[in-house]
Image: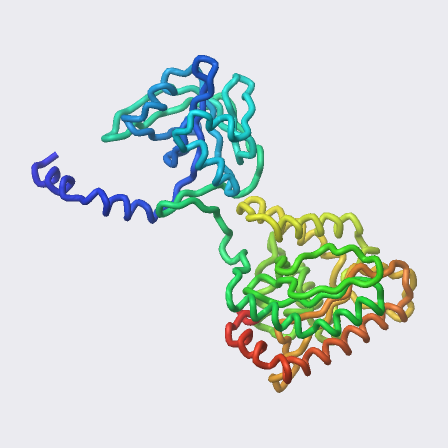
Length: 415
C-alpha cells in the first residue's frame, strides 16, 4: 500500500463509514454451539453464502468477541436465520443476559446444538477456517446440513434498526389515503346492512388502495353467517380477481393482465374477453360449482396474501394458486340454469363525477350465499346489488363527496 493510500484510509471517519454502510440492509442470524453442556451463541448481521462446491457459508465476528472465542473451538455450530417477527427474540439473544437462553424457545439439533424456534432456516456445520480482517474475523463454516423450516420473510438490520422485507407494491399502507378509502366504503353501510339482512349472506365494500390491491373497507353479515373477513384485509387485483373493478378502463385492463403468472397469451386474451363481458352485463361472479377444490385453495392463498409478508418465492406460489382458480371466474348467469352455487357476486360503484361509466374505485360484493339456487334467484341478487351500488354512487356525489374527493385526489384507483 502506498503512503498516500494509507493516509486516505486513515482519513475515513468511522462514523461516516457506519452511516454509509448502514444504507445497505443485512440479514440477521444466531450462531450457536454447545460448550460444556451449556448453550452459547451470538447474533450477527454479517452472515453470507460463500460457495456451492464445497458448500460454505461465513460470518464475521469481531476479533474482541468473548462469545466467539468460545464458539471457535466448538465441534459444530448451528446458524438460525431469524424471521421478521422475531425481533424480540433477537434482542434478547443479543443481550449480555446470562439467562437469555431460558427466555427464548430453542431445541437441540440432531447434533445437539441449539436451534432457535420459529427461525426461517437452519444451517448446520463446522468452523473450518478463519481469516483475520481488520477488527473482524472472516469465519468460514463447512455446511453439513440445512433446511427451510418456516418459509416467511427474514429479519433485516437496516440503519441501526430491525425490520422486515416487503415485496414492492404489495403493502396497503395505513395512511391518510387508506383512511379515506375506508371512509368512502362506510358510505355504503346502509346498503350493505340491507343486503346482508335480505339475503342472509355477507355483503362487503371493497376499495382500491394501490395499483394491485383492494382492501375490505366495510362488511355486514346476515342471519347466522360467520364473520370471516377483517377490515383492511388486502385482496390482490391479479387475474382472475378484480374483473368488476378493472373492466371499465382499458388502461386498467392492460395493467391487470400484465400481472398474470405465469404469462400465457391465450389466457390473457380470455381475461380481456371476460372483462368485456363484465362491462356488458354489469356484474362479475365466481362459482363453486365449476371447481370447488380450486376455490378452496384460492381462499387459503388469499389468507396467506392478506396476513403475511410473502417472500418472492411464496409470492410466486400464491400467484400460481390464484391463476389456477380461473375456471371459477368470468362467467354469466344463464336464464335456463338451475342448482347454481355462487361464491360471490360483484358489481361496480360508478364514479358520480364522470361523464361515462367509470368505476369509482369501489365494488360491492355479496358472498356466503345459499347453494343450489335457480337463475331467477341469482339474477335477483345481481339486481339488488346493482340497485345498492347506484345508491352508493349518489351518496358519493352528495353526503360523502368530501371523502370521495380526498380519495380520488390520492389517485389510488388509477395507481
